[in-house]
Length: 457
Image (tube, rainbow, N blue to C red; front, top):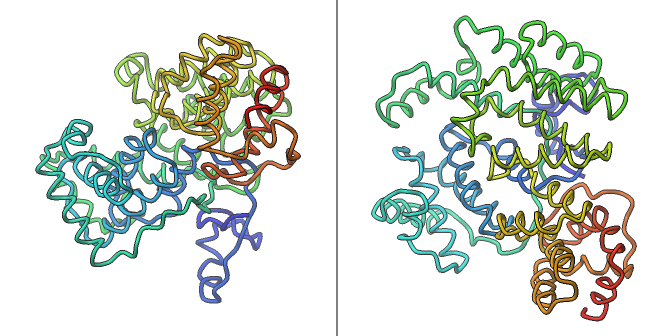
């Protein structure tokens, strides 16, 4: 179960967003509404949910800084610690209202303070190289943060947790896109000017959303953002069709049709494919060449990325694995930081097809991925390449250290639940359940490896 999100449809059935309907009444009565999420959250989704939906930001630049923090920390630290760093930045930024002059300074300072708290041997010099900022700047800002923690913050908890947050729609993405468009219309010479301009707007969404003479493309995308939040499926589908009339290359319109109007997986794949083609036309070939490598950071790419991801997953469902692999690889080439969790799906495809060499290359590319999925799949890859090698013991040790629950499901000591957990917590039993549900059959194809696993537990 999870808290009903502010932008989710209201529980009363009015069709309005919760924040525009019963939220104030529930808050006055001290009532917390809950709902059920139909699928588990990936690590990237959890980070985006915490930043974009759970936490409030007094300045959009603080929100952008939080995303930069995740981008630079996610591969190096456990999930619950990265979330702690995000919350640290949120509390400090909203309370102290710092002026951001250079993008990397505060993320570097937050990471340094976080490293001090958790006992990591991270130097300011290494962070200055990582974030391309000066050591002096990191030192100054980290001192400010530590002073704030001494004055305001309780001790940082060290327990692991899965954030109880909700997904549903691209509301914050819409706000970011409006802010970005608004800033692009101005000719700022410094970050200070941008800060002052945003303060003058008082962060009013109605003001930031106002744009003179929006193009058909912008009108269509705004309609799509509303469609994501529309609880009535028939209305949502019609809104997607209306968006295509306004601008035929609206990729997210096809994504909505794939998820809501398609009667079969094949039909869903067709809509997603049309979304890919629409996205390619809308963005243009030059845009792909210029932004390859950090695609997700450009908001206008996300409808295309969603379409490509959906198409690849549909291909997997239709057992067209080679086509799925092609698109998974292209997604990672466009966005190596993998905000969508593509690498897990690509690795699974390699395991299904016995492509151990490419599976090993993918694992090496994301060698800092410390999830149960990658840790236990490292053993499958090692066995596929070298059989019962000496290296398997060290891989098992690392995997059990990160998640000690997985082997119980693989060895049938615990029954694998039929129901998918609502959340995935780093290193907890729910993460183990998800791994077992998806990968159990792969281990049972290797009885020798499974027997070895039982002997070495």
